[in-house]
Image 1 (spheres, rainbow, N blue to C red):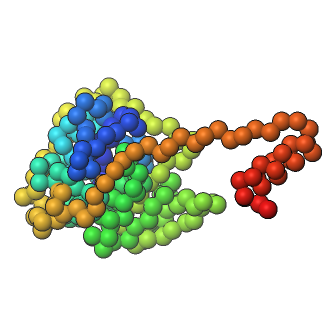
Image 2: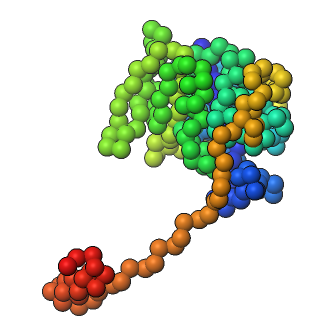
Length: 262
């Protein structure tokens, strides 16, 4: 079974800044492997242990993302594909997913593609589903667990607002994963770190994945970030003291003054 995990390196902070084009400024920021992607990887490794096969990881990112990719290899991934080219600079999720879909098809085919449900720097939740749509394969999000794989299908447990649903899809398929509340992330072992240095690490450029280059990077990105700012702080609400009846009377009078009630 061939499995691919899409991963991303993200800033180790919530205080991110953007330039005039709406592109994140990454210089000077400490970076880590996106937590949703690490869970997706660990789920993929669990599936490999159960059914056999090979787990590869893939990212579309600047060269410094190699740190996160090496962590994936140290955790147990067999192979890494690192797509890095100035042609991809300024990509929004549509341009990113298009380039990734080309690279996936170039290096595949794969039985299952795993992705994190979202990235902690953007929280869009777009990449996994968009890659699947470009490739025209089944997909679902908010996956906490792969339940079984048999007869060319995969069954997953997907989170809902008020519970769960079980979804069965034909392979190949893409699952976007979200860690359950009790999930404990693994740390690479020393032997894993040493082995990672000898595992295949394949660099890819824009020319290596073919496709329509007008859909790459900033030129292929239909969305623009006009402005980024933190939400305004909410003012503290007014507190009414006294006994129950007196407090209720004051609240009603206050609401009438504000013309909330008459």
